[in-house]
Image (cartoon, rainbow, N blue to C red):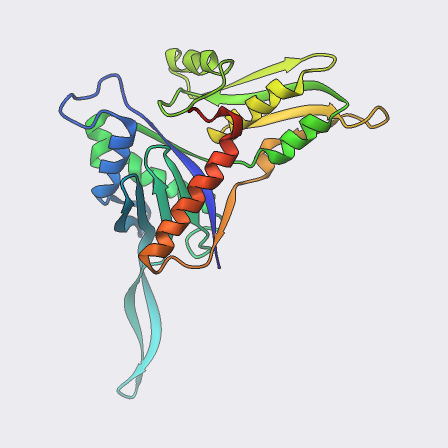
Length: 278
């Protein structure tokens, strides 16, 4: 059984983009992948993309991994010798291009967690020819399951504090109306991340639930300070403790890859919840 973690790849084209190159973030992302970027991200370790397979009009499967030189001890012709060979561990990735959502399979031989693999993947994107040609920046953030935080918000006796992080606006995102001005501010200030916090005697849970979903769907964080009943001491609940995971049996066959992509899309829609645009 394979375990995948969901991430949002964010593509930020520069204001100095060339008119003869890809213009939309999704176009930049697709062209970057199709060029199969590779780079030596650590001494002696070269990371690569490969095995690209188009699953449907908007979905891709590919592999990401690294090559290194290694030695193994063998016995040949009456002698023990050290034989050099190339080691190339890899893992599986599926991507929904319009939403920029990808699922990366866990592979301890590449990194203790999928987050480490995701960081190397975005490093490859950032060093690609397309990134330089379009002056585009790439980011990647793990998606978090908002349901635990939302359950606490809906059942709370008192909510006294709520905060969330936000990042630059991304064309696909359908953020809640309250989030858009903050994202615009970050963009105009040429920043990367920001944080907003509200406090009160008893904040309204419904609005906070929508904000929590917005944070979860865009790879940002949220936190609430609340009491579940009158006698309980206030407690803090964080969004970033629950990464979105998907289990899938195998991705050997094309149909299995497509089924995984469909599953990833369904899970992402559940994360977005009420902020899904029609």
